[in-house]
Image (cartoon, rainbow, N blue to C red; front, top):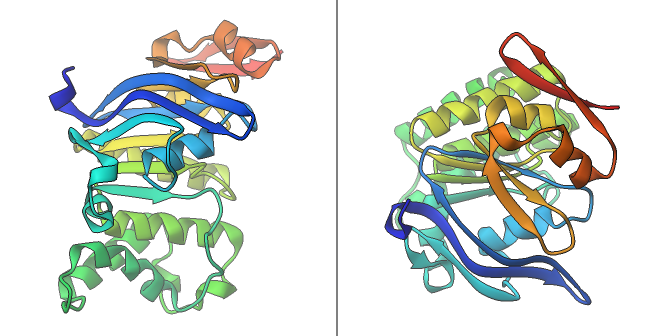
Length: 257
């Protein structure tokens, strides 16, 4: 894949915190239609890497490019029209009605004096249906459970309709059925041409949904590999505990030994 084909690209990217380099000299090209799982132990830098890819923190070195253009050269509204970011935890206390909160995802696409219209409302209805929250549209966001608020944040991202989705632990607070439903929908978006990058705690979800995995060692090494190469040995080295692998039908599964 050439650089001109990349939806999101990094060149010599370095991400770190004072006194510690978490990602060193990371070069990658991520294409439209890909689902990439971001894996690594706690503190390995998954959240910081995602925030750097989203343009929400400066890299220590290197460049992030969006469709060939340096991310830092773009206005935030331009970025928001193409790239959506789901943080691990809410950036602000929940407030307002659920439907109103989800509608905020459309504002990057509206003109300066433009107000949301019926098409935007229809997008909200569809997004709430996708995450199973349609019956709660009129509820105060603060009255929802943690899992419901997580799905509300995902619905807001769906309403934003970017071409690149950066998701920091999207399955947080979700039960197994909800986890599978959300990841199935994200995989469907990738099938329609979106680029999806999601940090995940469960390697089995990566094996089930991703095409490639990005492994963060926490000591500067970031390894991007096809999902077929994500085996028990690599997972053992990544997490520091032994893994075993088995198959259930065509699906590979792993577990700690």
